[in-house]
Length: 235
Image (cartoon, rainbow, N blue to C red; front, side, top):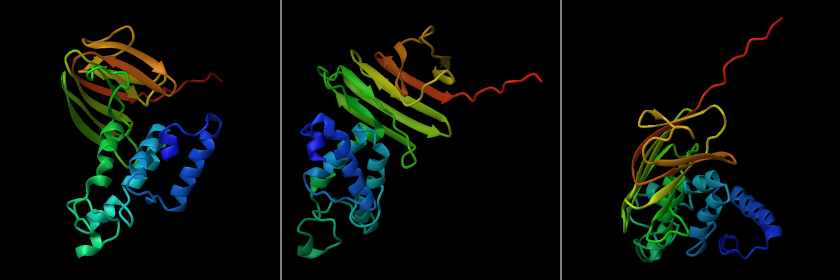
């Protein structure tokens, strides 16, 4: 996880290393085998490499060792150790090091990120990633330009998105939906390349997704893939 996170793996071996990492996770039944330092990067690497559902399966675990195991045993703060120990055996019952999962919740579960080349948070990336573990999320981020917000909820084949982009900033919204049957609306108005509602700067297809550039403002988007119409054949 660390080697992948810091770009230490040669390009021709990345796939092999990722496969080894996932193989180890599966062999441990989606439980953590990391400690203080690598836990943060394990989840980040998986989500960044298109394995977000694997990362969510780890985060959703309830048996030892996991965050859920702590919750199942009444923890209201993060323990220093994964084991259910008490007294001096636990060392610390309020140890923030494993709280690194918090940044992953923002960046990959809610999908609210600051672009790597942003200046003063003027460029944001919104990446909703619904899956079988997470069907809704909402996050806000205070920035020098104002509050950035991304909330989303998936029901069936439809995803509803609430987005707020601070004054002077733009956000790149990435939807894991594409194709001719895709229908997107903003505040009830159909959104197409030929018709962009106020504030929407651009909409364009990308491999396996659709990208929408949003200017400053508040948005209510709904997206779904329209079912294919049956065709009649002549006999």
